Each structure stands twice: as C-alpha cells, then as structure tokens.
Length: 233
Image (cartoon, rainbow, N blue to C red; front, side, top):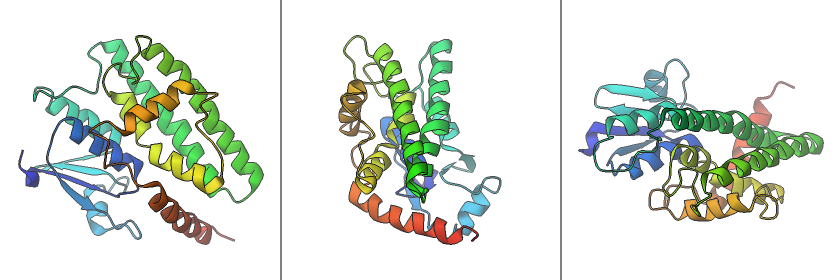
C-alpha cells in the first residue's frame, strides 16, 4: 500500500491516535503520519472532522473516517484478507463483548484519568484515582477469564480489540503515576494486568508508538495549566 493512500492525522500524546497506530502496525500498513498542532486545532482537523473537531482522523484515498474505535474496525475489516491477524473475534458474541469492554474503558478509565489529572483539590483527585483503581480491578477479572490458558492478552495469544483499547492508555497511566507519586496499577491487586502491560509494551506493533513517560509528564503540565487558565473564575 503506497504511503500517500493512507494518512493518519493525530497527535503524539493522544492515546486514541496511538490506538490507530497499533492496528496499522498489526496490519503491516504503511501510512503517512500528519502531526496535529492541537493548540490551537488546525484548519485540517476542522475540515476533516467538522462534527466533533477531534483527532484522530484517518484518510483512505478520498475516504475520511473519524473516531478511533470506528477507524480501527474499518481498518480491520478492509484489510481482513491481507494475511495479518484480525483484532476482532470471529464469533458474534465475543465481538460484541470486546466492543462492550472498549466502550467501558473509554467511558470509565479515560474520564477518571483525565479528571484526576486536572483536579485542583486533593479530595477530588483521590476520588477519581480510586475510580481508576476500581476499573483496573474490574478489568483484572475480565483478563483472568480471557487468559486461562496462560496467554497474556485479552485477545488470547494475540493482541485484540480490548488490548489496543486499553493499551493506548499505558503511557498516560505511567505519566500520571509519576506526576502524582501514586501507584494505579498495583501488582498486589491486579497481577494479571501488570503482566499484561509487560507483554503489551514489547509487542512489535506497540514498540515505538507509546509516548515516553518523561515527555508526557512535561506535556501534562502544559495541558493542565491551559485547562486551569481557560476555566472561568
């Protein structure tokens, strides 16, 4: 696939951009990366995604697809016969459950991480990060059901939809742990998830995609300050 046929508009720090990159790598698809400025949003984002005005945006020739979960399913479906593994289960029920868990991760984990990071008082931070820990306990139960044959991934012996849905947040989890001096993923509480992270970050499709922790920490300081400054006094 020629690089000029596939383009991904996103940001290096965006977990949702990382999510799409994982799947492109799994499928072995060459593509052009277009880095979005974000502060402020570029005209290209506003034109490509006029409804939500968000990244990532994926272009396949003259076709433009938005929203990371929709993009990765599109990629998985269009290139299902290129010899690369599918990220979606073949069974209809398993497929529905994988989608359920990614929706849960996007709703519960993403919002709790973000709200905890930007909270300006310790009580609010504590409440949001406790919610993060509860999400991990719930996902610990789920991964134990998935890897009962000794496999590390939610997708069994291969990276699947839930893996890329959760794995895109690993960089931010590590950065927030460093910023807040807390442990969100605790081996004593969620040993299977800790092993999952270790296996996920060294997967060939993931290596080189996740942002460096220190770089994210520095970006997070700027991000939080911008939000604080933008909040009406």
